[in-house]
Amino acid sequence: MEPSEPDQSQPGFHSRPDRFLIFLRGLFPGSIPRSDSIILTTLALCVGVIAGFGAHLFHLLLEHTDELLRWSARAVGSGNGGWVVIAPVIGALAALGLIRLFARDDQSHGTSAVIESVALRGGRLPGRALLTKVVAAAVFIGSGGSAGPEDPSVQLGGVAGSKMGQLLRLSEQRTRTLVASGVAGAVAAAFNAPIAGVFFALEVVVGELQAALFPPVVLASVTASAVSRWLNGNTPAFTVPAYGLNSALLELPMYAVLGVLTAIIGVMFIRLVFGIEDLVAKFRLSRLVRGISVGLAVGLVGLWLPDVLGVGYGTVGNVLAGRMIDPLHISLLLFFKLTLTALCIAVIGVGGTFAPSLYLGAMAGSLVGMVAHMMFPGTPPAAYALVGMGGVLVAVVRAPITAVLLLFEITNDYRIILPIMLCVAVSNLIARMLSEESVYTERLARHGIRLRGGIDQNVMERMKVGEAMSKRFDTVNADVSIRTALDLMTAHHYYGLPVIDGDLLSGIITTSDIARALENGTSEETPVLAVATRDPLVAFPDQTLHDVIALFAVRDIRQVPVVERSNLHHVVGMLRRTDVMRSYYAGVVGSGEGEIVAAQNHHS
Image 1 (spheres, rainbow, N blue to C red):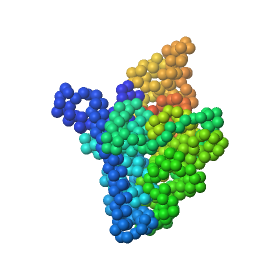
Image 2 (tube, rainbow, N blue to C red):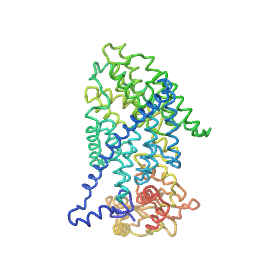
Image 3 (cartoon, one colour):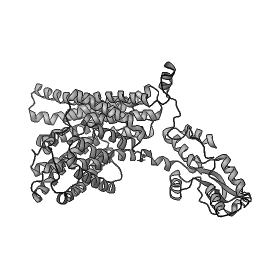
Image 4 (spheres, rainbow, N blue to C red):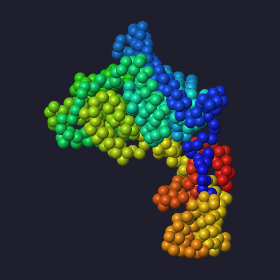
């Protein structure tokens, strides 16, 4: 039966009460509104404060790690060259040692773990394991390791939201909201870009732009950005001179070419990361060998090209300011930064891809800008470097709105928005043609989780129709009048019923069939078989829900009879849209086999 009112077991409703809200309403009767949006946004504000301070503390840890290693190098008498080679080895071994001691059994990784928790685990995050990896990332990046600091900051913000939701016993949906709020705050604090923080949380972590999430997520982002400005001053992540578009007709095609190039670089980066991971898994290298090998690789390249070490924001700033104009040097930086970052992330397993994406985009854009400058004198190559940052970023993380808004907030200049939008759009299109997954969702896909719009598509592929269908269902006999059938469907809120002739399925009658027949002058006493669909679509118990959902979408139907493969006229159940929703909720949000059975028993 199609329910006339929302069912608590369906997505969007919460099977567990918010005990914190119940406590507050009991403590202050009449003072706490039934609509708890004010309370939720207040909690999001608190998460934003924590995310802002967390991002600041992480960057302090990075700086002090670097200072400590420099002091150690001077204490043992190593020259600068010796420190450059030794420091990444120490940092890599220390990072792997921390993970071995405190997060041995955790296989999660950075932002991918936060995305998975929001989509599948009700916002629950392994706090100890992720915080260990945050510290490990600070040690490794601070020692010169080539990786980004934003992913660890995102983990800090996500853990803050997750633990607050769990501590206060909030529902899964509200805990997810707090996780998204923490992520938004972390990105906002890292770049002093509150708008980009909001859309990163919604595009990447939540997977869709939900209006209901805007108030808490925006508030957390603004709060974290305010904390960051209070601690660090109101300065953007990069100091960028004012740029403009001199000739749209001549320059826009070059920005489109840049979009293609950055898409290729972004997809190469993703494939290289996971290709190296596969090799490491194949040869089963020990932590000692992995740490020494990666540390030496970073150190030796850094001894020759120090601009590839660490986060690299100083190098990006030099390119954007037009102080780095040697095409050979920039090409080498592009190649080795791509290779070393993929190696560090794949082998050590800490740090992120956000900052390296901006770095690679700046180098690629600068090279294209030099060509554009030769073709159109007066065109600043650094403008292409800025736009290229967005191109590689969107190819790697697949968040086009975030990429555009981040660059806009970095520049605070509207005049270059057209090239940014064009490059990001082209890069996003080409990257999706070359690779379906982002660097975050590819990691999840390798564990059997394929998310689209925040929903795991593989859940529908794993569940069978026989598990989700209603085993108790009503039918109408073939000789019953359409008036009787309509009365039955109206009384029980059915949209359709199987038509049975004897014990065999002869068709399906829907409210639309009856309405159409009556409009055409058919008598209310006409047997239903005369107006029913005589050859209805059917499903089989061993089919996957994924296959049947396609029927619902393409044919715009609400239910299908389920029949035996050996006897196509023997109905064993009915599968309705609400059955699919209920089963998905039990299988994903509920995350337990027992809840799947409970959901089946509820309507079988």
